[in-house]
Structure formats: structure tokens, C-alpha cells
Length: 282
Image (cartoon, rainbow, N blue to C red; front, side, top):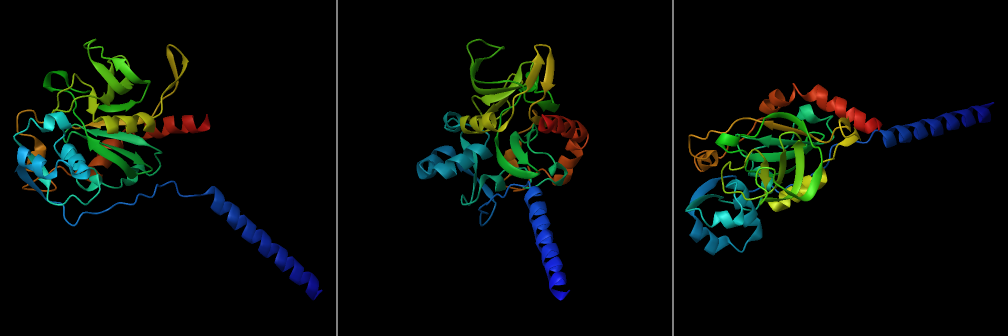
């Protein structure tokens, strides 16, 4: 009897361990783990562009940070008289850009792209964790980029602009088919200059090109599955100096709080999760 009881207890224990292992296997955390290097300090100062390039131009990490902070590409950087630069170049770019590292309201969203018109910056999030960020140049005052919720549609490594057939758009991903709005690599002059599209540095355009999903069509007139959600929000102050010029006086002048993002995202969240569920089921 005792031997039989021991066998029953052993079987129950094995089954219990087995079930626990199975539960553990099917419920992994979705949040990506990002190892970041925090700078010793996040402070900024103005420097003459020529002087800075002579002393730091060969430092690729420092150059990447300065391009992002000034929302400019390398050819246009050289045209600026003075630039905003960090006092410490050791940290990851996320600490110098305006987006928070985590956004709890996005914890169930597999991936999303956010574009801030106010700060001329973008960010990608996966299950609420910031995975990539960088500068952008959005619509100029007379051709503002539309704001709201969009989904990525079709993409092309190179396409021709519908505004001017002499403009070649590399790593283009459309988000508004009828208006011809998309994000792609193109000149970043350090202010909103596009004809409503969302311009990116080439390295960032390539990352977003691979990050986002294309739509799937049932027929030429009907979308079967939408792509990756994209939220464009905020407005740009075209009347005053560039907002990032405030950074030397206030290092948090551009910071976008998690509460602000939650207010921005919450009206769109049901639609985002609905479309995500469709894709997952398919």
C-alpha cells in the first residue's frame, strides 16, 4: 500500500512539473530586452559647426548623435553656422532624443511607429519598449504632413515622387496611398522641408523599411490586412526658432512624457489591436 501511494505521489509530481514547464513554454514575455549605455550626463551646448567638425568630425558615434540632435544630414550640417552638441557622447541615442524608453499603453502592441511633428523625431516601439529612434524632416508649412493613425501600405527600395518626377525616393514606405504620403530617405536640412512626406536619414529609412509590414490586398480595391500602425501627432511651430535650440538651456525641452503619448495613442488603440489580431490569426 505504501509503495503504491509513493508511486501515485511520484506520478502526480512529474505531471505537475511537466504542466509547469508547458505553461512556461507557451507564456514567454513579449517585451524585447534592450541593453543601453546611459551617458554620464545629458547636457547640451552650442558650438561653431566648423570648430566642432575639425575636432569631432571623424568620430562616427559623435557625428551620428549630432546629426540626430540637429535633425540634419551630413551635407547640410556643414552649411550650419552653429549646432547643438551634447557634452557627453558616451550614451545611446535614445537618451538624447525626446521619446520615453517605455510606454505602458503599448504593452500589447507588437510594433508601432510614432512620428512627432513638434520635435521632428520618430520612434519604434515593440510591446511598449523603445527599439529605435532618430530625426525626421516632415511637411513644410504649406504642405503639412497629415496627422492621425495610418498603417503602412506598400514599399519600394526606390520610387519616383508624385510631386516631382525628378525626385528619387529611396527606401520608401507608403502610409497614405491616395495622398502619396510615406516615409523614405531624403535630404534633412534641419527643419520641416518636405512636401508632406516624412524624410529620414538613409540608415533610419532602411531600418523602418525592414521593420514595418506591408498591407495584403484581397483585390486592387480592397485591403485584406493592414500593415504596421503609424501615428503622426503634434504640430510644428513654424514662427519661432527650432525647438531643439532650447536644449542648452533645458536638456528636457523636447521630452515627450509617457502620459502625453498615452493621451495621443488611446483613441487609436482599439483599431490598432483589432488590425493586429487580424494579422495574427491569418
